Length: 431
Figure 1: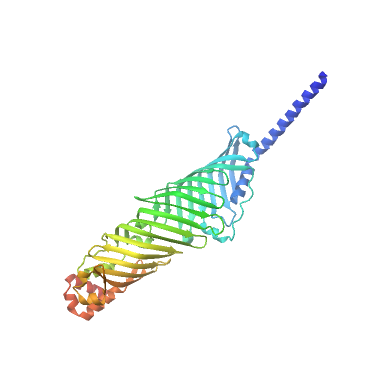
Figure 2: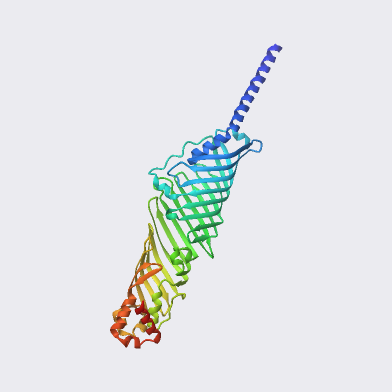
């Protein structure tokens, strides 16, 4: 009996040892295979070729250390091209090694990413991301990031000092809090940026966007679908943003002031459109040098480079062409400008403006009032002005009509004006 009992005990002990040894070997094989599994899973999930220059596992502290990570996109529909990560640490709990999916929290630093949003339009359908492996990232933290968004026409957006913390909330939903130290997008310069992002299976939503732009800021929210044509909707609001940050380079030396306004954008991979309103305070406009000649002609002050009392406009933009409508620029008791202007993607201007002078002023020259400034309302008399050309060489048709009127009137019109008026008319004739 005793020998039989001993055999049973020994058998149980041996079985337990074999079981423990088998589990240990399996666990060790799983640990030693972390590098290949992590690289394969990451590459499959994001559709990329992944290279890692160094890799080590600290089992007792539950950490995986990787350095020199290079990512190269292999999915033609993905809006990114390549990236790199200097340092990455993945953390896990030892007991999770035995789970069917091992949860990981990952921390990366000193990373770069090159985005090309236009690449998404090259694919007619979004490619599947592949089957998930036995690792699952539940938290992702990043520091010291640099993101380059490459746009068409050699334009780009640079985002510096990017940091974010993202968490998996289950049901394939991620929430991310992102910050950046600065953003450069053409003339727009933001000192800091913060935004909250929610990623779902079919769309990405951002909210509480805030970009500090000199003394002003831009806030907003929006969303983009991840399937089909990547339909997007964005709403932005600008407060005290320098006008020079919102216009193309050729206009920057001709317009100054602080802009308040709203913008509503809708678009997809193929096109985009935006509408909104803008109000400019402390506005100065050097874009119409001929206007100073016109006001001086009737003995009114030259408003070139002088702060105006009001400057507002509605706008719409579609595929590179900007339409300004309901323009209303005023310098009290001097002049008003209204009308519409179109600026195409090549910078060509086609404007149909109305220039208003106080009726009490134009009444001093009856022919000027009846033949050119013939439309009267709001105590102003208005003349039509057709504006063409480019920002650095705008042309208008009002000057020629004023000169022609002066020639028809002989010295009558000139004699009623000041000597400065005479000099200006001579300047018209010599231009």
